Length: 54
Image (cartoon, rainbow, N blue to C red; front, side, top):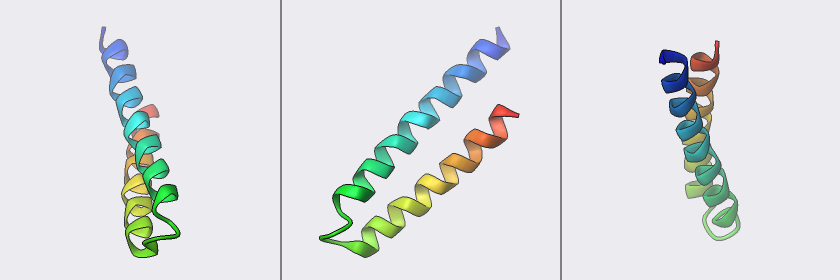
């Protein structure tokens, strides 16, 4: 049961990561600073995913 809950949390974090990376790509030419900020947020989520996976 706990493992199932853990998988759902990782899955939701992965969706947030994918969304942020897509947004970062979409605004990369028009607003590089915003793109960089979104990439940093995505990296933080990626670290959390790695932490929860172990």
